[in-house]
Length: 273
Image 1 (spheres, rainbow, N blue to C red):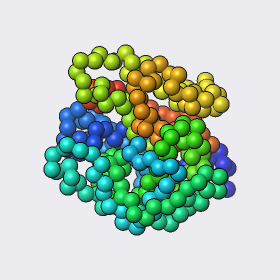
Image 2 (cartoon, rainbow, N blue to C red; image 1 turned 180 degrees about the vertical axis):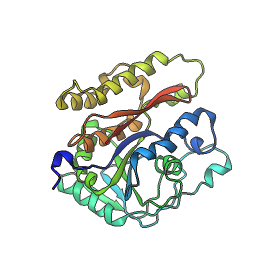
Image 3 (cartoon, rainbow, N blue to C red; image 1 turned 135 degrees about the vertical axis):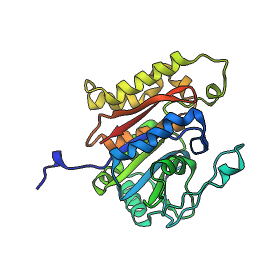
Image 4 (cartoon, rainbow, N blue to C red; image 1 turned 120 degrees about the vertical axis):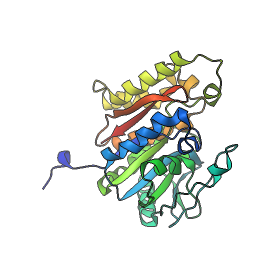
């Protein structure tokens, strides 16, 4: 019998989903990201299901999509007509949604199931590139509206048993997400961008950090260099905290699998395996 130390655990991936539907509309500023998402699946294998924690879904309590065939939510504005014709008809997974609900509530965190909500672009944009066949069942877990990093790490810890079920867990956000800066050509922000990016990589990958120190740094992320410049609102960062919470019971040290520019800004993706 394999020992716990040799037990194979499923992957956890914090990834960038880019600007709205632009990655799947052929936008040149997303070419490196698109290539990365298409290629990373060779590292991930074929999961039996995919759970996505998206930056674009916040609720007062943890909420899990539980429909058998969720629709698409076009939660972006001002794009060409083709952006509102994108399809990703992957099935949901009501049984796993119920299991996640039970794991979360068993840990003392209030939760609920939502059988009506569809998939937002934090799910269908990256997964249309990663798994275009849309055959792997997917479901989503919301963020908390308060965006409290400590509570999101706790949420991740609550669902750690999923790693034994060959379920790919994806935190879908962006390690740099200042919309004003993205669309302004007048602000030279490479210094700030690089400062925070270096801090994030060091915090998530350094073997010199104790588990307690790593977690504390993630909780106190606002103290990092240029933190609020890179994340005026942390909705695109805290999916990483959920990922870390899931990973920290087994493989708390992440690997950088992407560190290149998207729309002119350096962005990082992290993998726990």
